[in-house]
Length: 196
Image 1 (tube, rainbow, N blue to C red):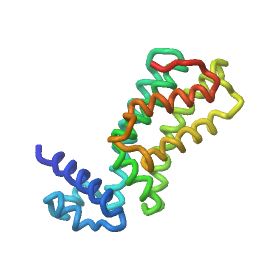
Image 2: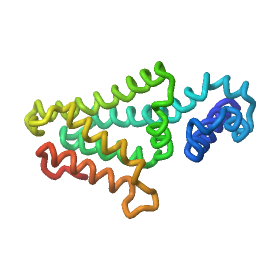
Image 3: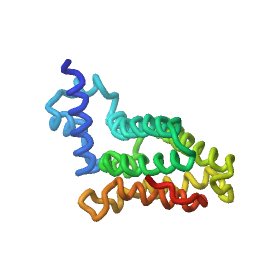
Image 4: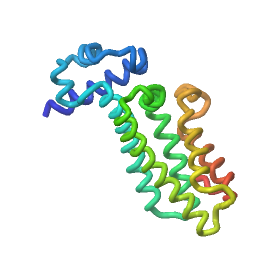
């Protein structure tokens, strides 16, 4: 079937162009020319440039949500599952750094209704992550001195900042940074060494 490759080409070229020129500096015409398709083909898959930007981030967020659900519902103590979840979100963010950077740099440019939808999708992820922290706090294995919501906001502030300093060719891999972030999160909650 030829449809899916066209959609993927559009996303790949939009990602590349948004990374190079910015969301505002890239026209729909430039995206379709780079993807080798017509505007009609683009509008078959995406309603607008906003829709493209939303999907660039949405595909990463959906993948991360699937992985978080598997980890949170999987085996291990709450500390082990939280450590795996924290390491995973860092590793998957660094593996999809262009997508994340483009989104956080351009989210404010989205139409208000689209922003609201994306924030709701991201909030669902954060709430699932927060549930792990709260589970550990209720069980008494994680410190409850700081509310779970604030712990999650602080942690994700660091995750969302990765695009400003992390480099694939840097001294640490995304997996290594993920383990360090997870260690820091668990240490801040009074948990012992649970790194795997």
